[in-house]
Image 1: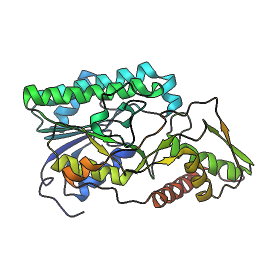
Image 2: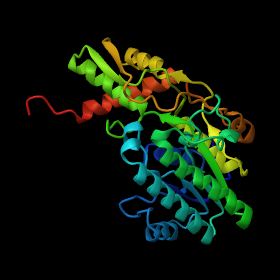
Image 3: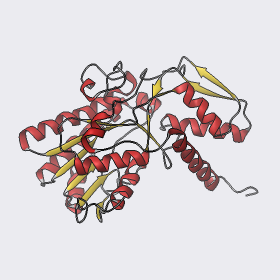
Image 4: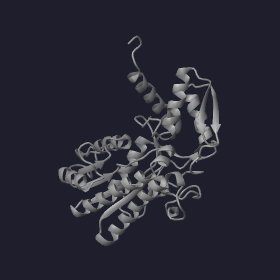
Length: 323
């Protein structure tokens, strides 16, 4: 990306900037000409506390905040931590937005979640559908907490003239994702499952649910591009989806990942486990029309890059034979 005059000399704070999406956003900002990017690390700034937030804003002195930090996980983690996921995401976002307003931040970019959409949203999900029902139960506390930050941002825009935008990325994937089975999302979980089974010579893998649910996936570098474009160009109060505008069933996803990882065993489904939201695919026209964003990475190419990264990472961390 060429240098943009918008970012030159602008002080930017990226919460969660050391994470999976955050690292991609920080890199994209640098590619766009940003030279003053502050990333408050959790070990030094606990953004769940007022003191941590005030210290980060004081030390970073940002003109623009991109709030990516979140407490997240897959279906299992959401089921085990509903109270924690609600409280920590809500308290962090509510206090950060308020303190950013008080210290005179010029623009605030809130990253929402596709988990905020109602369980039975018509496909493709349009931003106007956000309030037409309750989210899917397994991740509702997280989704509702994030949706409250949409309300806060719109209220602050109305009362204080605070420039808050709300971007909603669909499920992300890519190199550097979280592959911890206790908290990972579906793509890294399946990649790890298939690679580990192949390496161990196992004849099958077990997958949750029926495979009938569908999901849409956005490559992490594309998501970062959408967030930076939105921060630069979008000024609206309405939330904006970031996605690719197409879906794949979990069954087809597993079969594709098995092929790309060269796992040739049986795929066994456990229908006693939840599928999660039945379908998930976004209407992406508002991002395209509003600030010129469209995803540029094909799904198979993105998966291949993610698998290659994981296999290289697994080789680096595996014990040396004979030791």
